[in-house]
Length: 245
Image 1 (cartoon, rainbow, N blue to C red):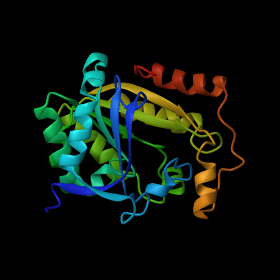
Image 2 (cartoon, rainbow, N blue to C red):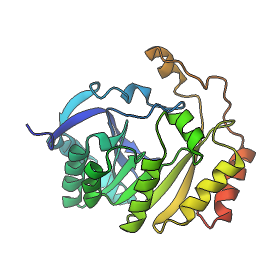
Image 3 (cartoon, helix red, strand yellow):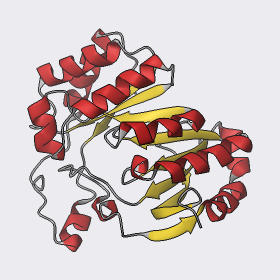
């Protein structure tokens, strides 16, 4: 069977409410090139892990939840890991969903191969783009990759008119520097299709996964941001004309 019709996933969530509008069927793909210090799905890193599934199998399961998605204004979100490491597979999932009238959302870092990734957007209704920092040094320290591909991807989404939500994880003593947030806000404010910015507070809920996998978890002493810290970040985005959730 061709790579267009099968791929590796970690798991699915049948009634997700945090990865796009409405109630969503969320597919977590396997494999990621980033090594984010706060990753809450470190078990999705290995591209050869997870399980092999076909698009037909996924669509059959998706259709069982179609009524919930339709009534709530929801749809299907492909997250990860990093979906764009399997672009042909994800494109086919989205093509099939759109043919059924189901809304599609892509949750991505925007880092993988740009040329291979572009066709996925033909069948993507909404992009949830994770921009984890704006300062290049902080971004690299946090993810172990460069920020430039993500910024290029963000600009392209704006150029083609693709609806976008920007996601920013607020990590005390790592991504919370006011100037870092302000630089990101200024960049995002120039993009034409950003509907809102989601500030995601750092949490420790994945610490047990890191321990179970034997990975060194550098943020085990990092606190969850306070409401005051979250509001301060939200104010910076709002000052740049951005809607914040």
